[in-house]
Length: 279
Image (cartoon, rainbow, N blue to C red; front, side, top):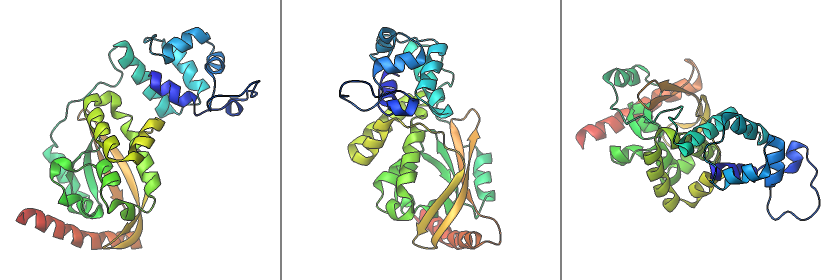
């Protein structure tokens, strides 16, 4: 919580909140502690104790005021409240969920969504299950052992990812921002993955230190696929209640060029499936 507040304070300047720059040189970008405390309506001493980790149980009223002063989004605000619960040792609003096996019904659903690429992901983006098109959409993912398959690991560490994702910077930023939401629901697994990724990728480490927080929702993703060419697919993210899992589905409207491309992807997916059966 203290680190999150400190980083976010450094990313919002006086002009962003209608304050004058004031006298004297600023040693660091962003609001000063006294400025943020004044905007939130708390004493500077109290806010300083929060940011230094000496006050671990601020009230929701104080946290809400800080969120407003820092111009946090709804996702970031919820994340701050969750971090505060953990810092205070309170029962978290979003309780950690132990990893669960993928239910047979979900595997059947993956098949029924074909030719749309679809995955069941853990809260830290482990690929728990995928249909053939899902594996084919990310070339080389199937070369990794199942336990290593993770969309964040793929995005930053697989050499094909920077070609496959046409807007790699946006995809990378979004997946790191979403991983921050798992700090509360899966703290140990998140910490292990973050440690691994920070050691392996300086780009991941820099994005992680920004403390951007966004829950992954539906959108559109552009691909440059080696087998089916360039295409942009809509995607939806479906939360699976109680399992600590979610389903990511890419889709295209029937009759479009993108849907025809997915039919070609099915052929590539069948090759992936055939290799998996023979190995």
